[in-house]
Image 1 (cartoon, rainbow, N blue to C red):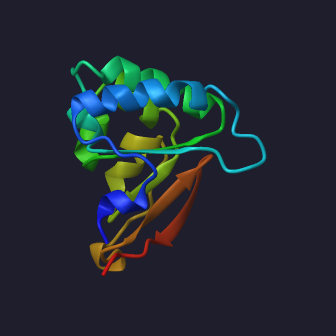
Image 2 (cartoon, one colour):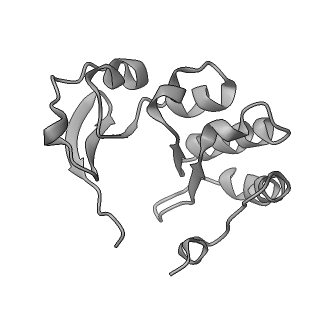
Length: 144
């Protein structure tokens, strides 16, 4: 199965991202309501910092979060500490999953202290899910 077949729409370069943000803007401006809303997944979030599409992405993310849609941003943990508007817009939600976390990740990402964590307790696919100041250990399925 190709990764593209998992998604309704994909954008793999800056021009396609710009087009997709224009297409998504009216949709994310509508409340999610009782049915599941849109899920916006941005892989390699930091790669869009200081590009021509950064502001458009920030606007789409703000509207999506404000209207109850799910926004998922992915990048290496160390890159979440930057103050760029795109990074901050997602990080400020203080809600997410850290895979194979280090104890300092909780403070940096969520302003929540993680308990002492042994790496052996967190094999591939295991992480900490944080929402509203609460933490849960989760196991995410891995593709074959």
